[in-house]
Image (cartoon, rainbow, N blue to C red):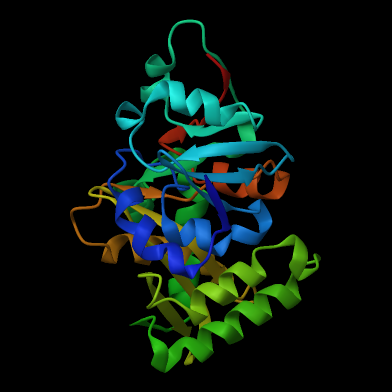
Length: 282
């Protein structure tokens, strides 16, 4: 068995393999693994099968499959799992493969917030009236221009990211600043796409993500300059309107157990709270 730190050289090995997994969970993306490899201490394990080993947000070790669970030899997976705290992330649909005596649980901070594209593109309903009001105020107050996020304007995205970091009361080591910076630097290589927004002629916000499956787009990063009131309500709404019609869902990823993220993501009233399970034994 061989063990290597996850690196860009593993993209050819893992990109398509992960995309072929039938789940909307955000972790099953090479870009996601690569950009957060240091935080989770990701390693690629080569043996009779291929796995990712990592560390959870709350400090536990786990082994992660790199293909659908029904394609894995469960005895070998059990053998591999003996060296870590649990198998993760496990889709609810996979739990039956572990048998009726499986010991598993969900850590709330792992759960993905998933919304219909229709909801974010309209903000319909009583519960989203504040979002509609902020969107209306933004459109009345400012002019905007939207452009694809490409090399020609990536420096403007760096400006937004740096301004965002300056405006929050946390050091960059405690935010996703470095991961987002790397994503901007490597967006083409990692097959990420996005839009950048100019407000009254100046860089105001951007969104960057990728296709997770045929009907789900995962939003890895969304950054805006808070001086523009309603900037996030606007860029989410506009981005959803511009997505190709084949996408039915937007995955805003998890809240990592952080209160501020939980409040912000919950305020958009998710259609699905997609639980990820940790399987300890079976």
